[in-house]
Amino acid sequence: MRCPYCENPDTKVIDSRPTEEGHAIRRRRGCENCGKRFTIYEKVEESIIMIIKKDGRREAFDRSKVMSGIVKACEKRPVPMAEIERIVDEIERGLNNLMEKEVESNFIGELIMDQLKKVDEVAYVRFASVYRQFTDVNTFIKEIEKLIGNK
Ligand SMILES: [Zn+2]
Image (cartoon, rainbow, N blue to C red; front, side, top):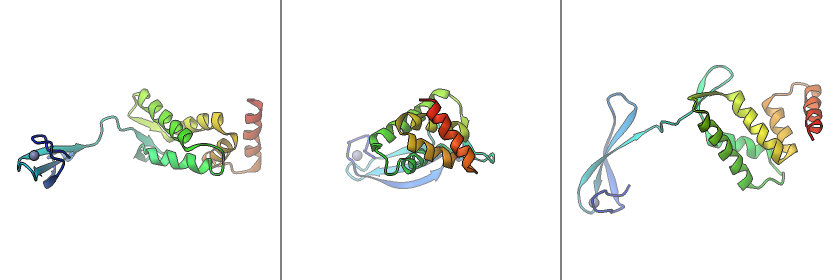
């Protein structure tokens, strides 16, 4: 972090401790150039979205998890990384536009499937088979028939 007094990029943390409520960390930093000290606060970004999992547990939305799920589904498919990033951006934007603090994990799964369907059908079916946990061949075939029917 740059020194606010002299713009020197080398500043050191002297002390860090949680604030009284524990929602933030307060850090004292010192500049190695001008010797001045300043305080910064670290806290969770307000726009954080919690995902409600099937068993009711909550977990913060994690972009990298969405990304790795999609990457897995697109393995050995002609889907460029830039396209995968675009999908993740789209999903993140969609969530932020909802203005909800909590979203069910199902909802995100559906968003991902909607996007994959447009990009690569094999990736879509792969993702859906993991996500919907197709327990037998029939549900799997039904999903593929739906997909073909949509064409
Ligand atoms: Zn300084």
